[in-house]
Length: 275
Image (cartoon, rainbow, N blue to C red):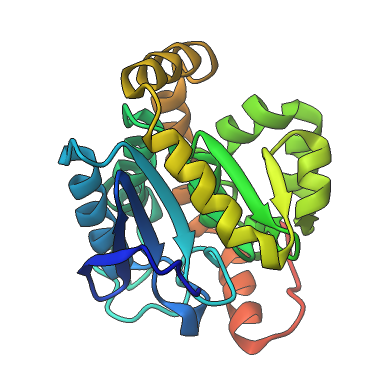
């Protein structure tokens, strides 16, 4: 992603860049070669960047975006040396979600500063959860959202089930979760899932203008509004995260998940057995 000239690199981690422009902190996922897939290193770097924007009183608005062609392509299914593998070498998804994903996602959702997701390209799997954990979500016209979990025999996680029901309702959340089809940015806007769509040329200037507007605004008022909205829409958020993680662990032990991952790696259609 080509950044505006008034942003300066505050910290470059291995997989994340933290940019700063006046009162705006921009967290940029920086694994463009893997479409910003989310693995253990990205979790650690995201958390470090989050701690910085959380604790810096001079940062009054936060942008989350991706480098390159994608926002976030979801969990890294090809990650080597996964620290959350069980004794059989299979991913312990319940433990991984609680330890690696949930702190970042809930941290952003509850941060007492406005968070803006700039969805510059595909948001897939937990990438959808990352985008919808923000307060305001804007997408590039060519972007899309995809809950790809069902395509490998898993269920939505990262709070996606709660976030989607809060934004688009049960009916459309079911469609996204069970059909596993792409939702183009324009349709996501029509559904009320996101706040706006910009053309490729307008996207970066529009995001920067919105972020600086928020950074110049009444930060405590934003925090109060966010607390109110969270209390109404996400009162059971922690319980929903725990349910998602427990179900994800169950799904990860199924034959369908093993077939789904193998089919993904081999770039073929999965042959699910229902077991």
